[in-house]
Length: 174
Image (cartoon, rainbow, N blue to C red; front, top):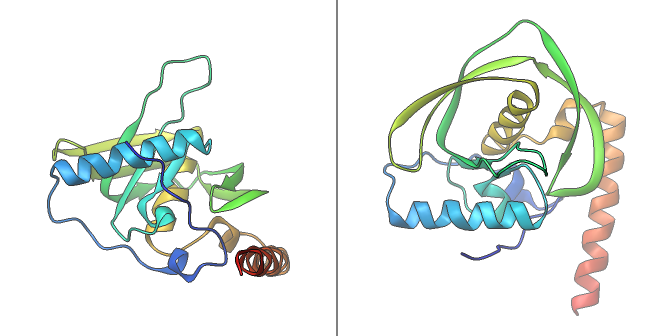
């Protein structure tokens, strides 16, 4: 397993729509393992493949608490097939937008269909943190970031800050 470098805002790769996977094989399972290792190392609770520069419709999540056993779930080609009218607000962050957090309102419950790491079709009904995390990561697969759910003023400030940081990182490499 390998820890992969994270793609950071303002990289345009994060706005790319990810492609569905045709099959689940050993290469995809190895990618899932790398994604989990990268997510745990960051540390985070969710990671979409596009966040390591791979435009596959694939994500990993583990919402277990620190004092609990790890409970990773691999989602291949996940699709939200139903969501509640009830809304919930969570403070969200993103491994691709480090150290920035904002409250985001989303449906409180979702039903997601996906393929697991064994290639089997699955369905999960989620609420609470898992529902928020699933929506956040599925957004990534569609080129949407959590900052797209906040005010334009706040979003523009965040993008400006990260653009400036990226320029500074690039000039340090020269």
